[in-house]
Length: 380
Image (cartoon, rainbow, N blue to C red; front, top):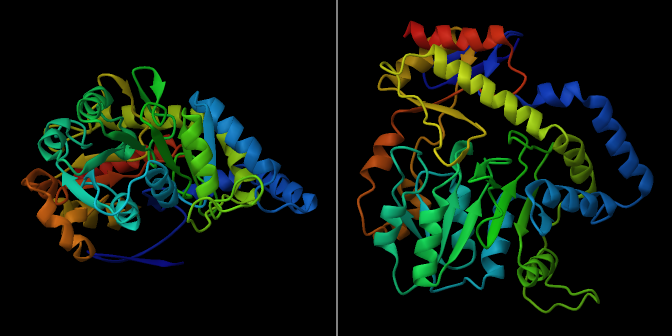
């Protein structure tokens, strides 16, 4: 029996432990299909940028109803390459939410550009267009809309800001595979959409992986070049770049899992519905449903004032929720040099980080496990 350490103590893990996410369950359920996919790659003798990557790119683009998909090594690399393909570099500013994964800001910094931190909406916990509008300057080149937790951003408002100011809209879809805005899959509405296939994602590999999608042929060609030394078809480097490739084995596994994505997303929505119906919104603040789109519940994030106490009680019941994210990006020491560029108060974001709690959420949760979580939350 293993032990898990939390801020409130150490607890023994057992076969009935419920985690915030648990990709091992899906991997075990489809282990035969995964093994076959991996065996086929090994038998083919092609391990880098072969037919599995090409087929996955085609299938994922088709699923999203996008023209082009470029497989890369990670979601962070997808953002870096996407930004570079748009010509963003030193001296430029990119507006992002501070309530997001560090990866969003790290990608901006990797291009030499400056992240400018925006406030998030109290309704959606995604980037607030009103905040964004106050931050646009002559140096602003792009906005990154992070569809956090699976909730689609207000893309109409953000697109209008981009149009009014001649800047780009980039979608960070690392937590939103299959989410929709006004009937369109997120990632297909801005100039570029960036996805992560980290193992815990709604569509997760068994290692790192990422993809860029776009409907612009010129941008797609530049992204294809930037993922591999800036090469053209003759292996001539036309751009300065390193390398970031989605490998054949991960692509083969993702092809297997892509067939299950809609089914899994629908199950996440069912679990969210159960949580919503069973938990008292008077004692915890429940996540909202989007008015113009489809939430795919990568996380089910509540807000609770006595969070540490709740975590302690849940841990004692072998339930291990998560905190995404305990510290806003602008408060991380590595990004301290950029806080002068915020130009606004980020008080709501800072308050948010002290009260958010991600309840267990994965498609394979049983009704018994869902009820255990509900009972645990209610017991506090």
